[in-house]
Image 1 (cartoon, helix red, strand yellow):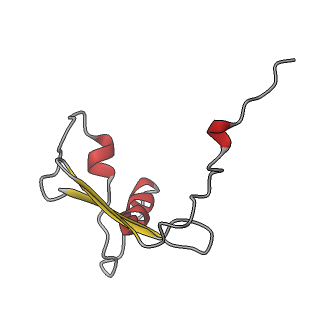
Image 2: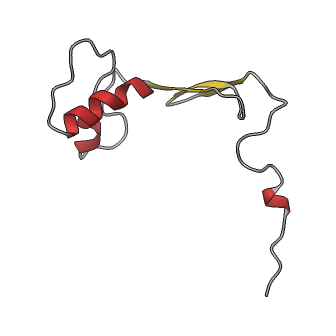
Length: 92
């Protein structure tokens, strides 16, 4: 699954046939299936990419057995506050 699969999924959910020019494939068969696990053997990985000025610049690929993440800016913190878990909230 990649982000390009979302547009055909939304179109199919709305009852509109996705145009043939779209590269993505609808996820509706997986969403409507009563099966669990690997439903479509041709979808064997999830590809992820995050880019922007204020966050990690990273790409990842997730398969059933492996997760690989490449962080291109390891000196940057994520959008979450890195110290948030260290803070305590005073009890009232």
